[in-house]
Length: 95
Length: 535
Image 1 (tube, rainbow over the protein chains, first blue to last red):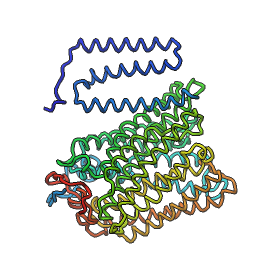
Image 2: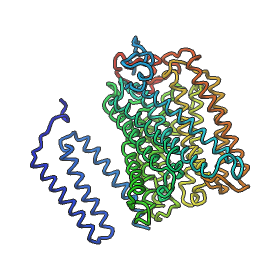
Image 3: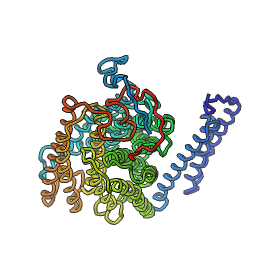
Image 4: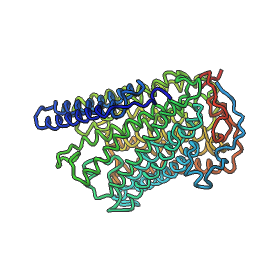
């Protein structure tokens, strides 16, 4: 069996910690919408969403245990998404 | 490079599998049969789209109402756009020639996920069916144009939701095809076929696969947002609900501009195969052509805003998008220089596919240069939303992808069908088609410069002469198209048997019989040299 096809058993405890972390970050995200931070509101919301996504990708989707090539591909895609959002913001922040 | 295959297996056309008749096709997971399913579907929709286009040109032959009402004209340009973009040019080369040839050109027996490949075709047919249903149900056909611009797209009484959902389903077909090709290229290349020994058509399919995989979900989500706004009144794009109409344009073009590269990159790949074969010469600057394919796919993500120069974006965004637009012209130009350099001092075999390739270069250059006129901020103000844009777009998309599609069709026809076509009629058809093409769209450049807006069914008398020329060109082009298609269909019956390598090509597809056997290769070939080894 190829290295990237090995089974990895993650303890339920880890899943529960991650779930708790995701809920906490969601609550933080919702709470921050009540505070006026101007442009930073969107930036902080995106950072929190990115942290949450990385938990899901690494733990729930087993990216942590996969071949490095997949991690690099995901990082590349996220970088592309960041670039697209940054360019879009060039419009919104300068109108 | 090549292991010759003297194959005793029946061809994929003669193979009797588990299912017979039509079911032997629509339930087949053979990449070649799926490629042909796409070919028949795409050509059928292409004829429908072209006929609608011809009817629009009949309408425009004189000012005022000629054959259809204004509302019907709006529905026609919407349907023409949706069919031609989503059902013809986006899937065109990858789905037909990519499916048929990619595994063969990289020395594989099939794509990585054959069942997923068939599912992609079903998504494709379902998506187009939904779009067609939208024309005949509800409160009239959609009239927004193929771009579904908000806020009109959720205020019109036209039957938007099936059309939008159809485009959404078509997106899935595209994503799955892209994913399949990426995995196939990564995992199923023949032994010895390193990345830089891979032919250029698979290389462009690889670059296209990434665009399909990463850009298409954006349009899917955007179309769902339109549905949510229309049905649930959630304010994404409607200012009265707190939304932003420009956000729609950003999201739409974030996909739809890279989609232009889904259309054009495989077209460039096909041209990169045709030119060295008929020049009997190694392609000039292989590495640079590969790099420029990747560069086009990459930079293509960041230039969507040039569709929005007059929409009210910030100045900073305008300058940025204009600059990036000029940058993407560089890798495109590299390819053109390399193709022409390949022809330099070559012993050229003047056959129909080569004529298509040269035609491609000519019209693609005009389309490309007119694109720079539109990518420049000042000139775009004058030309935006005029017939100039329509002419530019058709020179690039129909002139680029369309010419490459027909070039590829004539190049790989002997391999796909096992028959040779009548070259004389093929060349006559091409000349008629080319004459009509230049007359039809060339006139539209001048109409646009004079200020004739696009998507208007009526116009001022000063545009009359240009429209007569353009409409006559449409008729000539349509006639040329008929000659080309009839010749290809008639040659299926009357054409002489094709040898395995009628043009003297060097890539792997020319080492196996025409038409190919079911599993392509008796033995997977071992690659030791580059793909265009003419020495």
